[in-house]
Structures are given as C-alpha cells and as structure tokens.
Length: 236
Image (cartoon, rainbow, N blue to C red; front, top):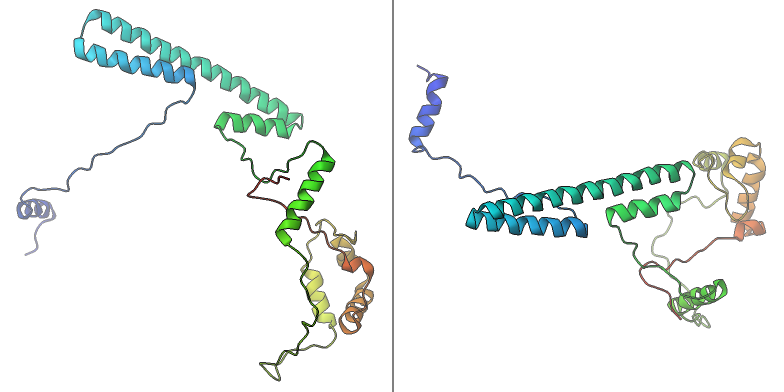
C-alpha cells in the first residue's frame, strides 16, 4: 500500500527530528544618497534616534522628529535639483548639444572622466609636437637591415595553394563582403562604387596586375594610421 501524500511530510519531519535548513541572515545594503546635505541630515537623525532609544524622553523624541523633517526636506531639495537637471538634459538633447548633455548625465551619476590619453601642450602646435615625440620614443630607432637578407628554407612542399591570378568568383565574393554606406578610405572611393557600378572587369584586371606584376595605383598604397595614447598622458 502506498503512503498517502499528506503523510509523507509528517514522516519526513519525524525522521529529521523536526529540523529544517538553518535560516541565513540577510544583510541587505540599502544605498544612501551621497549629497552632503542628505548625509549631514541622516547623521543627525541617526544620532537623535540613538539618544531617544537610550533615554525615551519627550525632549529627545521632539529632536528626533525635527531631524526626520530635516532629512525629508534635504531629499526634497535634491529631488528638485535633479528634476531641473533632467529637464535641462531634454532641452539640450533636442537642440543637438550632445556634449553638454553627457556632461550633465555624468555629473548626475558621479562619473569622473579619466585623465588618460591626453596630450599636454599650451597650443595645437605644441600638442602635435608632444604627440609626435611620444610615439617616436615608443617606436624607437629604425632597424639596421644591412646584410639581413638570408635564404629561408621551405618547411612544407607542394602545398595545394593557388597562387595564380584572382578569378571572377573570388572577386565577386570579395565584392559582396563590402558593406554599403561605409566611409571611404584614403583613395576616396566609397564601397558603393564597387557594388553598384559596372567596374568588375576593370577592377579585377587591376588586382591581377598588382598581384602578378607588383604594379598598382598610387591610391592603393595610402593608409591612414592614427596612433592613440590610451593609458598614459603624453608629456614632453
């Protein structure tokens, strides 16, 4: 005969001698405001609460009541200030003043802008000079390559790697990988030109000439390299 469901709980408690999982104390941290007015008012209220608990006098009860009112007034004052800043954020955003908008947002959340990646200098020319000298020291001197050419032995032979000219299929695959609307590079040719204009044969020929004969347009040899100091402050 099966044990009824209602008896299983009683049987469990009997075998466990009525013990349960011990209750764990929950230490919930309540965040408080960091505004000086609120901090001072809260400290006064906590001190008044301790005094009233210790003495229980009518005088301390009135002082505690006044401290609570001061705390509520401090919160209401901060609330009005925050509401005013929120309204200002909406107005600045609608006017397109995004820098000032984010400055107020960071001020509300207490976010401090890290002083990293800055370039010191009293003028634009001085900052450019500081930036140039910083990366010149980072990159060091040009290496001495005299007599450095040497034969490199082959490790693998007869690998199945096609080193011939680019095919039309390879060109089409590369062209389809381009994303419409991306900004153009130093050659000032947007990706949409390759995708939408009938230039496949011409571009494929130019690519094969560059691959097989090492002859390429000058625009294809230009690169935009912008070093950015991230974790240090560039100084003289």
